[in-house]
Image (cartoon, rainbow, N blue to C red; front, side, top):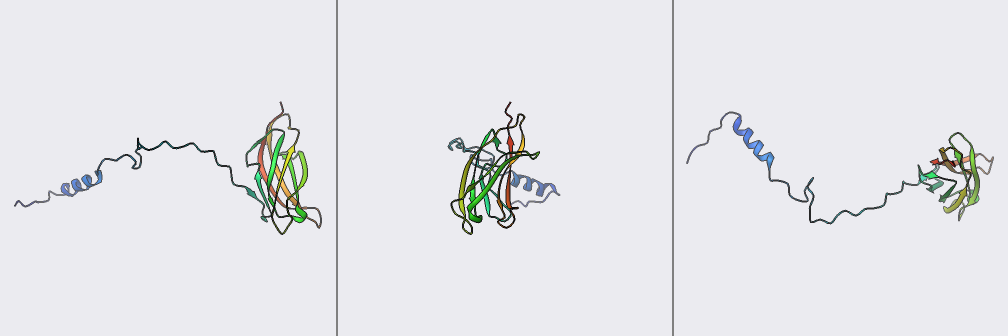
Length: 158
């Protein structure tokens, strides 16, 4: 039997390099496609999460944040508000109110009901940023007591 002698630092370095190389990657391992695997199916882009008011009494499911509006919008969600009275408005970033009104949730506070309303408005000539606001007015003094502001883009009518 022959005796092996280390040759300085080269011997351990060769062992480390050889161990790091390992076997070649196989199909299905990280970075290598498996040609026999079925193709990934296309899925719909997920909608953004609903927006919730600070107090948690109003949740807006529609419209989605960043949605483009052109003279109409569906406003829907859930609310736990006094006498089920849900207020809404469409307003430009400069503060011009394009539409406003109210609708009724299916049930009033303290329970949570659903609401849905189709809102039409006259789009500004030039498009601009804006908001769909859904809010509750205080029964005591009429001030806004809770609000959700959904940022949207209002397309121009030109």
